Length: 201
Image (tube, rainbow, N blue to C red; front, side, top):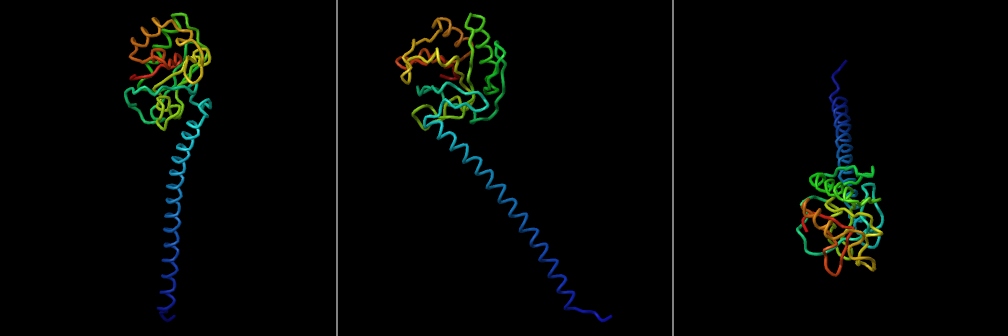
C-alpha cells in the first residue's frame, strides 16, 4: 500500500482540531467559573445595598440585628464581612452567629447578663448590611455586634421612642460590657441604642 502523505496530514489536522476544541472548552469553562464568582460578589453587594435601603429587618440564616446600628466614629472593624464566623449557644438554648475571634467576649457577656437576671428571648448577630443611613458596613456585617431583644430595647434611635436604656440597668450593662471589652449602645448620648453591644467602640 503506497504511503499517502495527504491522508496523513489530514488525520493530523483532525487531531489538532479536536485538541483545539478541548482547549477552547476548557477555556470557556474557566471563564464561566470566573463569571460565576464575580456574579456571587455582585449579589453580595446588591444584598448589602438592599439592606441599607430599608430591609434591615430581614435576617439571613446567620441571625441578624434588629435593624439599628450607630455611626459614632468607633474603631474600624478588624474582620472581613462574613469572614471567620462561628455559632455560640445562648443560655436560653438559642444560637447566634458572631465573629469567631470575639465569640468568647459575646458568650461571656450573654452568660453574665443572663445570670444577672436578664432572661432575653432573642439575640441577633451576623447580618450583612450597612449602618442605617450610610454606605458603610455595619459591625453586624463582620460579626462584631449583637442586638439583644430589639423590640423592648429599641431605645431612642430611629423613632424608637423607648427608654434610653431599654430594660437594662445602665450600671449593670456598662460594668459587664467593660468586663468583656465591649461597647454598649445605651451610652450613646442622644441616640441611645440599648439593644446593641459591639467591639471596639
